[in-house]
Image 1 (cartoon, rainbow, N blue to C red):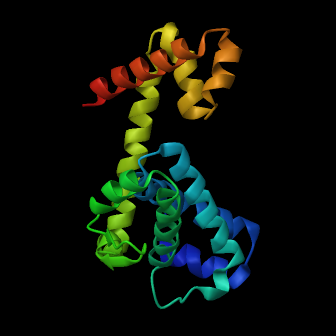
Image 2 (cartoon, rainbow, N blue to C red):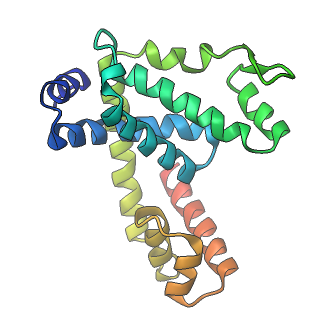
Image 3 (cartoon, rainbow, N blue to C red):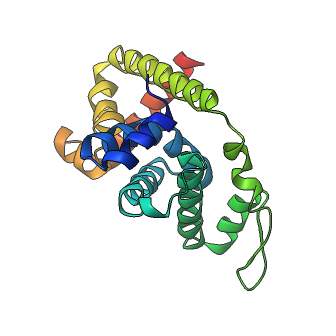
Length: 198
């Protein structure tokens, strides 16, 4: 299995679609998980991660190869996540940021804690990232198995939401069910999966 360093060096050398894609899919799971911890919204985390990884293509010349590429990308994603949080209700934003030790003054300027929000990720080794990816893939495989044995009442809807990433409204239209019923079944299906995995 190629390392982050090897994949990054390949992409920097070739600038090819294939090498970009390999690096993209190597980084995306961990990056999305990291962003989700900040924004507490999986769909938004996916959007921010994809946007960040797109910048890996368009702004790669700004990357300093002396550092791990994930350090650069996690910083970009962190700043993007903060931007989204700041667009939400101000008090809610401050509460979420405080969980990361970040304080903001009345002028909206960062006072403390900004570095600490991603220090943990800068100190990680290549093996740490590989172990995280392996654990995530293992959890993904187990989750797929649990989805497969769900009752039909939940299975199709959960597949449409979690795997096909369909919107609630589209799922409701597809299954010809009220939107609230879809939301309830997704919530219950997730709960069943979580209980099985715990």
